[in-house]
Length: 447
Image (cartoon, rainbow, N blue to C red):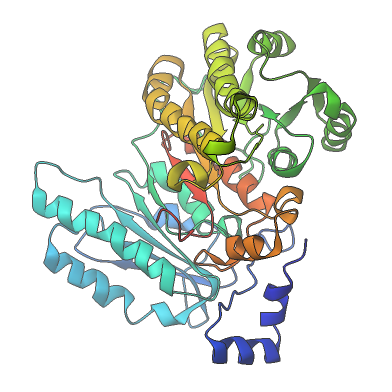
């Protein structure tokens, strides 16, 4: 369903009226397209607190040229060297003069360091960057986003910076993303032990030669994820229940992939997936999910059990089965779908919130072991209000509240979740592990 309020505020009368009444003024977001794959403007690189990072070559490969006399589309502030309150003053001094000049739908990315728990001054200063970036994201406006990336190795963060400094991250704001040292030697089978993973031949199709399976891919967000992974070069397996067979085959045929029809909650679902993929799997996206909303006092077990089965139990069982069978190739990616309902809670969704919070627990527990034992990363996306057929059926006032209660004052699109999933699935994202990234326009619920 079209967001008529967003379109109205884009008109001169709409801007005047909403400004006079103090109403939200969302800006139309610039999203990725083949015709407009990069931000429109230059990149400004700043430093606060001193830094030992060499970002020159990494930033040169993000697709955003250094800012000259033209408009500034993005600002990267290297604050990894900030270790005290005086260093925080440098953060203010660096960004205060330039924030106003960042173009609409522009990007601000602050780079921080992991907290040094042996140095409470450094830990306090670096934690302060989180409050700073989240607050700036809530006030910067005009469709601009602000995110914090904690890192120690600039080269390991290349795929993350490419994503955050592109139109693909239009609905990702107020996030704190930790980038580790990268995958362990030997996790990319084409590399020799100790050798750095080679860059993809085509950065625009990083999944070329890889197989990706998306559950619940016959429609909605799952279909968008399958489309985006196929765009990036993956051979896509569209998994859905037999009842959605016609739609699943339609999507698979359009993308040059294959349809796999089975009930993901079946006890043998993992074994059947493994049997269907004798050459292994490189990307596993757990997207299938259902809702059965009702307040707890009115919720019978028949509404509780199916939600937990589809949204959580099936994810646990199939992941365990595929890891045990060796179906997930080394260098593989698991991306699960959580929700802000699992992070902040939502009235009438105790079942759904429990299932999605369970996904977060799965990611945080499994990620280090899956990487160490199988060479596979495990992350999650947590969508907020996304414009789908399901949200279009929500009553008007609740729908409008869902759209406006985020820093971008609008709902997201299935493509926003798909682009975030594709970044986590990228072979270059091996240093991103155990992360839960909200795709919610910086929802005002739960931070």
